[in-house]
Length: 458
Image (cartoon, rainbow, N blue to C red; front, side, top):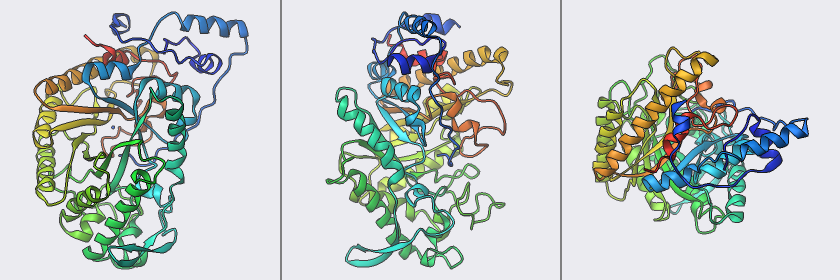
């Protein structure tokens, strides 16, 4: 890939720049986030009307090399580097060129969450059918795989055409209190009726995990070789208590909301953490041995919550028939905190329990003084570069101390699509209406100073 001129969309469209260059130091530039559904806008590639100007820009873009991120991180850390994509983003040509050039892994931001797999039929069940489970016939909701398959087919097409530059996929997520329709927990899949018993919910839980994992990673699945891991349970520890998230995390939130922001109907049905243990048992039962299984959470560097997460990990690992292959540290951080030391301490603490950690949804909220203006952008970009640099060094230090850092994923690609521009104070979200610039590429698809933090190999 090359350093881009002023009109990146035109360059990528006209010249299809996909040349890759070796990793190296870049002193010039250094001197200068489980999210509820975000409204993602589709951008159209803009073509310069003046052909002479277009050619000049193309030539200028080819004069300065930009290293491929995936090669640099693999050389430095020996791990995957990924990004989240969702909605129509893969059909944004400049964005897709960034994905295929710089990343060797992706996470589908929304398409593999329960509400998506129920066809976004959130208020009412989309219909039922009968299924066999452990010799018993049960009634189950109809699943809809159209959303994820559309993106997976695009990735598969890329992989088939580029076997030396394939992109792997992280499944996200099987069990989560949010973006799971409330009707899923009730008799006859009708939220106006009573909640089902834990025994009935267990059947639904096992069926759901079996169907999803078999469909995407089973022996007969066209996608079976594309997935490297799956988030089994997401955000099951409370910010407030540092213990398990209950059905009373937010007293002001109605438990019968179609999709919860804070309260857990999983907890309401079970009354304890059994659903977490069972989820990992079922995932281990139906996943191929090569598919890694994860627990994933945010605010994971806060001491009280870290203790609760460690207890969860230890409880799951002590149960029969479970496995956790890595702890997913979401990494929805800010330029003002947590500290790099907090990141290192947390990585080491989790690594001591499960051996491996991953940053799974990395982005940086802007400082309070950032207003998005040109005047404040340069200062903010430098703060961001320093913060990413210190945190990246913290991960390297943890790895040098014996913790396996097996993956780094950024929660998005270009700033203008970041969920922080749409969501407020949920799961590491941003302050309402605050300007944000959390990712490695700006709204013009240009690499920012922080990008070059991750291309250093010395």
